[in-house]
Image 1 (cartoon, rainbow, N blue to C red):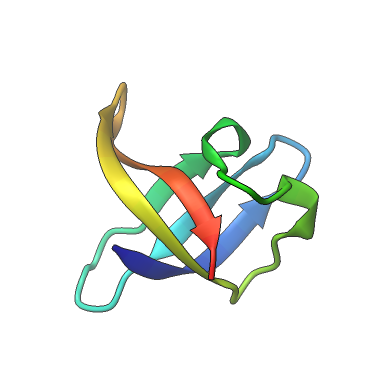
Image 2 (spheres, helix red, strand yellow):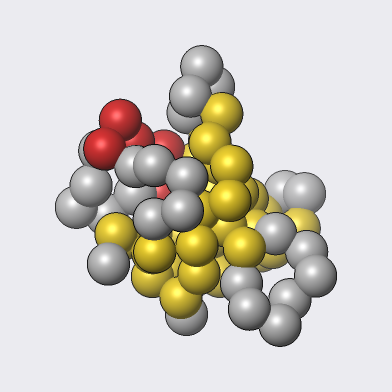
Length: 66
């Protein structure tokens, strides 16, 4: 799947990814990044990811910058 980083919470190392056609943004944590450092991400960056069921609902995993 692909989406755009909508919001980054840099002091807590997590963010949210928006997807076209989806109303709810997906949570992701820096621990789920693949091949990119959290500090290299910016709001608006395109990313690819997989969706996994987390403790609080769906979350993005294996997040890669495109």
